[in-house]
Image (cartoon, rainbow, N blue to C red; front, side, top):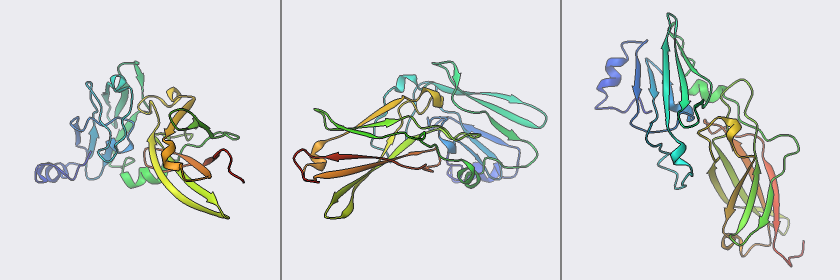
Length: 238
């Protein structure tokens, strides 16, 4: 949803006169698990996703598997004091997250700044470990499933992965990647218990020791505490 961008701004200007107006659009095809698919300002705007296919952000080169499972939509109920939107996956016949409840009293719980500030990030369970192993394909990171934040839509959408070169008493950053959590468009409990992320060995061929750090991020890109893992090239002195 980009409510400030429409045909020369005419729709936004007109709808801004009606605080209880709700504009529903499906053209973006974005998943309903993206936090910004509901927006509140002078009016309310909602992304309805798609029953055919879903899209991911244009700034991400990554391909997400399982697009055939991405058939989503909304079920809307209107009451005297509120409008309730159920976010549904029609393949698995389940909700993908808590209902969106739009009050009709003028309050704005889905203001983007408010959501970003209030939605807590997911965290890895106590004692969770990041594994790093060598395979024929490259260096494989094993990321355990994080826990969603309690009391809100704190699912894991992606992982922030950082790599650091270790040596001579120094720790130098090598790369930062953001990798989608597999099945992030489904209920949080359907996330894989262990997600594997593989990096080509060529990236680290000149390094003796590399430390990886992974943090889980919610729909608002808020990240929890990191877990770390170490890779050492065979034959390298510590």
